[in-house]
Length: 258
Image (spheres, helix red, strand yellow):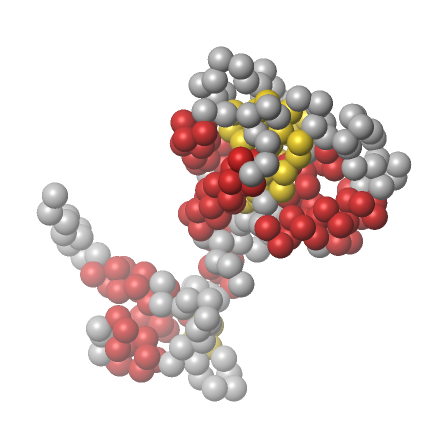
């Protein structure tokens, strides 16, 4: 399908947009000459566009070296964009893909009142699987999503969310902060969390955190089902799959790994 030509009079807008996109995380400040070369523009045109963007706060100039960087107005626009989209709508197709690939139940969960709230779910195709649980909330320390989130948050925030003694749901539930911190260290290394019989005796799951720019993590994705089907190493393979999907969602939301 041939690429559509831009509307008449849009050339200056497209050029300005190309300049705004020319500030990758590894190069937050750029010389005018660099930007001109990269955008295929003359230096005078580039300077004129940058001056217009600067007047609106979309770029700013470092007074010490004269280089340009993204301005504070881009932060405001980014925050507005994040509030405008529906996380549930954006991630639903990912849940369908995970459920289709694994035949297990996939969920989108968010932190709400100190628990993980199931915001959306897609049930797996197995005849024996999990029951619908949309809208329910579960303890952070006994869920894969909760552990994934706790591992990604600053330790001070983690301490705020956890009040000992931790509730015991089964014989396998982690109930001490010391044991939980050891578990969270493993989660940080792996990039995903797992549970097996910790919330319910017969339930296992893997979860990973979704990251967004300029914000603490608050959402996760998971896949879960009966422990009989999700014993190790299948559970860890599931964890790697969920981690990859969570990273892809995070990239779509504009998160750039540090």
